[in-house]
Amino acid sequence: MSAGLDKALSTAQLNGLPLRNRLLKAATFEGKSPGGVPSDDLVEFHRRLGEGGIGMTTLAYCGAEADGRVFEKMLYMHEGIHRELAALIATVKATGAAVSGQLAHCGNFSKNREFQGRRPLGPSAQFSPIGLSAGMPIAGAMSAQDMNTLVNNYATAASFMREVGFDAIEIHFGHGYALSQFISPLTNRRSDEYGGSLNNRMRLPLRVLTAVREAVGDSFPLLGKISMADGKRGGIRPADAVEVAALLDAGGIDAIIPSTGTSSMNPMLMFRGQSMAVGLLEQTQNPLARLGLRMMGSRLFREYPYQPLYLLEDAQRVRDRVQCAVAYIGGCCNAEDIDRVMTAGFDFIQLGRALIYDPDMPKNLAAKVDYRNGCSHCNRCTALIEAPGGIRCVELLPQG
Image 1 (cartoon, rainbow, N blue to C red):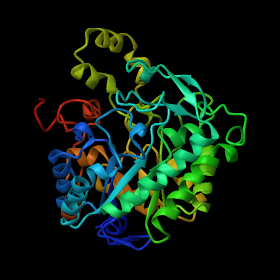
Image 2 (tube, rainbow, N blue to C red):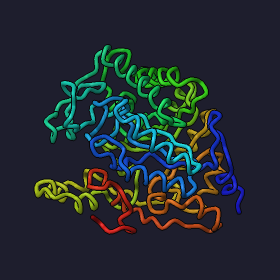
Image 3 (tube, rainbow, N blue to C red):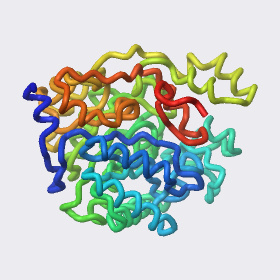
């Protein structure tokens, strides 16, 4: 076994949390929470990953409040799901895996038909294409009080997550969600102390990090996912992301996950491979929506060829800049890839589609030094988050 692979499969710690290996399940919203409640299918999904040997799995999406969801079937952190969530976490921990929760807020990126406020809010007022279908075409700008409320809601949610049994929290600073909206100059056009320079645009995300840290304590592991690029002209670039990572590092984060892309503007930048439009066409029944996908799919979902370790070069710049741990994500599908990432000095590896295809990947890596994952990167699993039953690998299971 190579030194890098041996390192990946060895025990590790994250701010004192013992992990049986350095392989982490990435937060991929599974669409298995009907009514905003964890289902038996969601429990089984993460239990199966634990049985497969993952060091820590990540439950997504954990909304900081009810209005922090993109749509209704997403979880948000409140006492009403305490019993179900605690049972899920206990079941997964019984397999030997740790459990992290991805704490997030959609900001202005919402089509939640159960929205309780007047309209979704982000850093700046703007048109919201995703909200149009839910009758919320215009997102508003947060006031100072709105931002204070947001920070408090993150802290309250984090406290609940620790109480209910999570081992760690991954704060979502990327992919076009609320905190990312403040970081990106494309969505943050404020002229006050929360807009303009990168330091100003990071002011609210850093307030959230501080509030979450105070809520959970110094010894509780906190990870942060960032986007290294928005994938649209005028947005965040890798050089900016290095400084974002440095500010989070100085702010007390324990580990950074340098991802890329935005769910709202360029989702394919983070996935690579076949366009998501193919899977969406398979799932969409509405004739007008199908017509729109046929006409605009290539523009809405740009196609980027899949390459192994497609984020390694940019992620290495983050690794070289910060003192905290860094978890690599992006195109790690075989033993050779994992060896290369570990040899490059990364502390952990997050895996997404590869584990959806093969939940036994950690065990199989230990058993086969030449292991190769069979995921074809067709991205049809990503189109199932709103479908009955949620995501699955369509190459392994019949479509239902």
